[in-house]
Image (cartoon, rainbow over all chains, first blue to last red; front, side, top):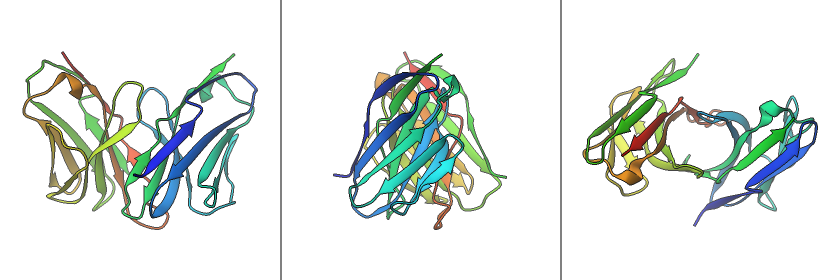
Length: 110
Length: 114
């Protein structure tokens, strides 16, 4: 059975810290891996990764995929209170179906 | 630009009552449409997806149903709600393509069944 596992489930850090969120997967016919940020409402798209070793970067957020070891990490540097959210990882298979992780709840304390 | 609408935003319904949630997409044609449910503190669960008018695929057996009467309209329904139907319902759309198979979400409907 396909599955996506995120760790940690929750994390509390202080403003200014750097955090690394993990996403490992076992998905037959992998197509892409996506990261989303969910605050109070709907998830918002962050990154889509399809190739190993190529870092995607957006401001203080960056992500990379390792298709050999079947995982991805999401890094957030110089965290701010506005980064507090649930970060969701999902893997899309060749049928364009998304398999979702349970999410990592990140809390940034001022 | 593309936008996705869902309504209502919040709904409180008694057990056994019917349900109809609506989702519409603007600014794109032939989108793939999805209904997800997110129970409190849990991940997203795919309920239905549709690749075209009248084409609905169900991922999990339940007392919910979905319909797609128009290209950019997706409706989630139930004849009799259960307590376990409470949750946050999200509609999403995507366009197939090498770099366009990302799903974008609507604002969601928070359903409480009492």
